[in-house]
Image (tube, rainbow, N blue to C red; front, top):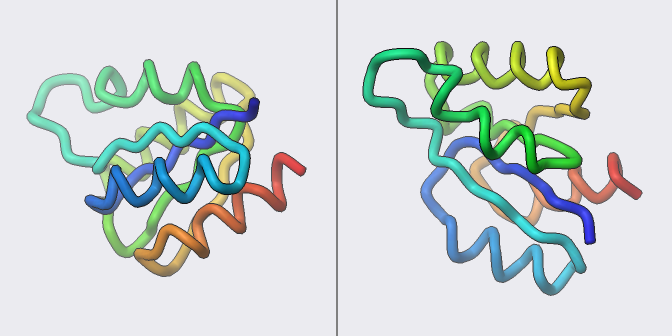
Length: 98
């Protein structure tokens, strides 16, 4: 089963339930960090993911840049979603992973 990482927003349960219905596992991180190395907050979720979707309107720029940099280093597929909704983010992920 494919793993989709969604970074940003606060709808963890919704993301996970909708992912199950679509046949993917969703790992969610709200994008918030508490200082220190920003990359360390995202390393585990990026390592597990087949594709990463960033919710552009629900994440601060430093987190977005850290996720983007880690994804590129790890060779992970990444895309950006303009909205906050789970449906659009998951549809975009499914288009990427097939």
